[in-house]
Image 1: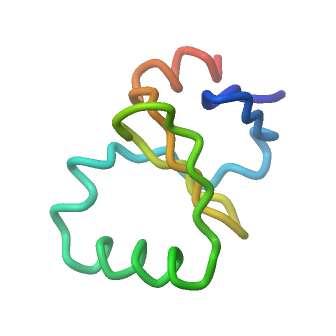
Image 2 (image 1 turned 180 degrees about the horizontal axis):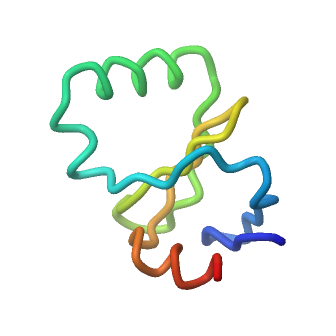
Image 3 (image 1 turned 60 degrees about the vertical axis):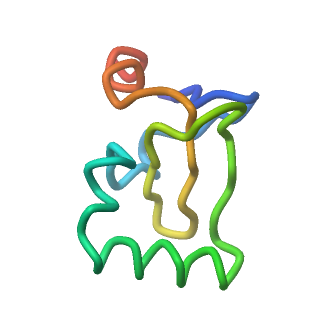
Length: 77
């Protein structure tokens, strides 16, 4: 099954490790540090057309999405 995360990005749902709310997750310093390292190493893909609301973690990349976790959950069913 596939998941459309916005801005013409489609991910294979088998590759997805987790879907996280960006506002809640980035409160934790370790998560901010992790995302900073991933960005520095070029593993962040920006699929958000507007304000980012969530991020999708896969084994190789982190995809930033403008869609909420609730919408992504509905699309994954």
